[in-house]
Image 1: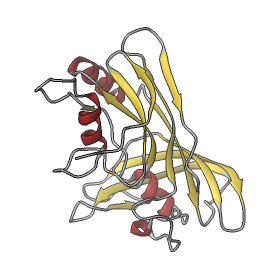
Image 2 (image 1 turned 90 degrees about the horizontal axis):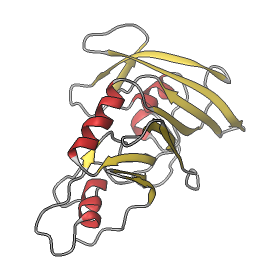
Image 3 (image 1 turned 45 degrees about the vertical axis):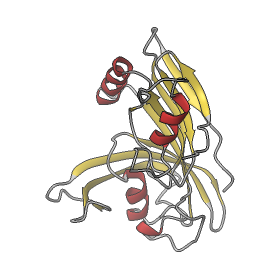
Length: 217
């Protein structure tokens, strides 16, 4: 299949950071257009019969855009997976909501579990069976009557965490009908963007910082 090339924001030895477009999944799924499928086509060496290695370090939901880190070999994937497990990676998101959160800055804490079909998150303010604690910090960047732009820093990394936590706090992300948004955005897209990613350099001391502007909202 002819896939659109990935937008590479930063490339190092053994890894790349791309600007994932909203509307496509991260992991390969049959012959569908996904980040992994595009990478395998883009990284395949001429005349090679081997499939290119694409290491999925972390994921962004299908309707979410922004910084996504991919590994190009197994040793780098192991290193970066460990960095995520040891919480050495900082992620910053921007989100646009149709209603305000409880304050201009603060912290949200919930307990998140998946529904019985595994497709949607459920958030509660108290522990529930099968739930894990989810914490994020937020601050208001810009606010109008029906458009509120937030900077979000997730402290934990749970399934649909930002989407369900903001919705549970009364501020669903614009376009996210799964979690209660009443405003139509674009098909398979919501106003949630992985704005910045800071992670340890796999090849040298120090950290790499990659940042990308939000799409037109």
